[in-house]
Amino acid sequence: MRHSFRFSGTGGQGLITAGIILAEAALLDDKLAVQSQSYGPEARGGSSKAEAIISDEPIYFSRVICPDTLLVMSQEAANKFIADRDEHTTVITDTLFVTDVPGKYGKRVDLPITHTANTVCGKTLFANIVALGAVVALTKCVSKEAILKAVLNRVPKGTEEANTKALEAGMALIEK
Image (tube, rainbow, N blue to C red; front, side, top):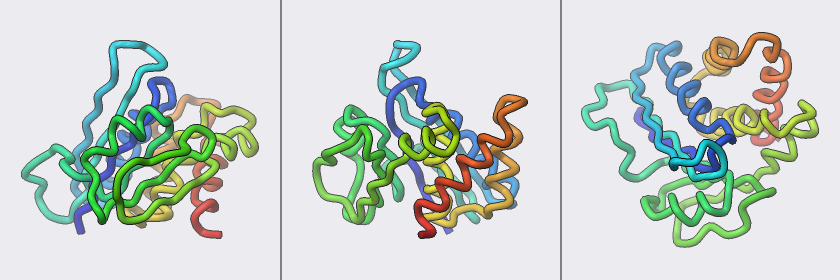
């Protein structure tokens, strides 16, 4: 099993943290993982992306050329990071911010990610964890136990309950 991911959006949405958490969850499941990130020079508001590759076999090239799963959390990200996709790529969008995904891709899954974070946790800043829950539920790339443990390892103290709710809410978006 080898699966590549690209999480893209706007700086400040927590997508780099989400990529790190996903890679950590893979390691907790005794899989191999690499993770990378890039972002614009702006502290917030510029484009950002996190990439991860999870595999049962050695990973010889650590760059995502064509993601199996592409999460887009802003229209700018949809326009900027869609170029490397192909007809097998699953594109997950946040319906609050993304209306158009140009080009061809395999499957599109439109989800109310930010709306769910606001409704379930009372703040949109949990959208990255909602998105992570949806990605894991959709791809089954790591176990629920591993992703929960990785989330709890990485989130600020005092936010564990809200992040657990956000993760479960993201999974529920797919498991309906």
